[in-house]
Image (cartoon, rainbow, N blue to C red):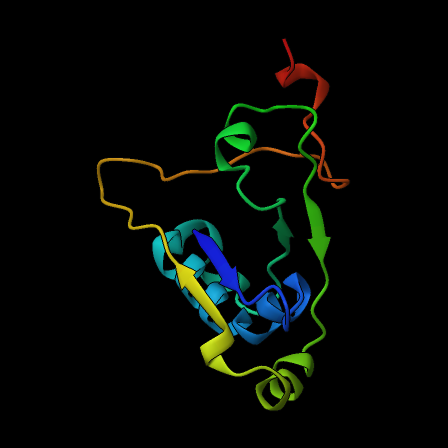
Length: 116
């Protein structure tokens, strides 16, 4: 899905941290077999804004940035960031598809075998 934030007041990391429980729950519910038991241990990466198409096409110029969220950051962020400053447009997945996903290395770059 896509995450939205007020660019003048909220950083990407703050927006993700503020919504971390919702993001993890959504991921575990749409992929229960693969992720159901991983709630609280999922890793999150963000792409630069307005790069969905390039990211999906494995453009090597689009790197993903890993966002590390400490377990107690979510509670602290509730006081710092208002829900009016962040939002999500979550993907709806049916039984007919696997949903949108990309493959990247731990560094957030396209693996060499996918280039070409």
